[in-house]
Amino acid sequence: MSETKQNSSSALSEEKFPQVDFATLILSLSHSALVHLGQAPDPETNQVEKQIPLARQTIDVLAVLQEKTKGNLTGDEERLLEQLLFDLRMRIVELEKSERGRI
Image (cartoon, rainbow, N blue to C red; front, top):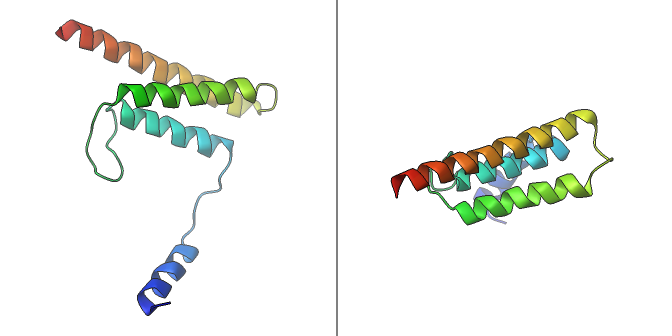
């Protein structure tokens, strides 16, 4: 392995990554939905672009997680998921209202 690759590999292994848990997973998916709704920049391109079908798909994934984990979450996890889904669904409704108003 080249010295540059070795240095970058060791730098990555020394970084402190947050613990991955259920909350981290659903927050990550929620952020992806916000990016697809055009309400946050894409982390790779730093561009803001609406991709509503992808936002809907991500919200559907969160809904499936909610259904499949029912009864297995802590109270905090359950409330977080419920609040995220409510917020994302309301954002889509508002976005659709504003789009209809432009037509």
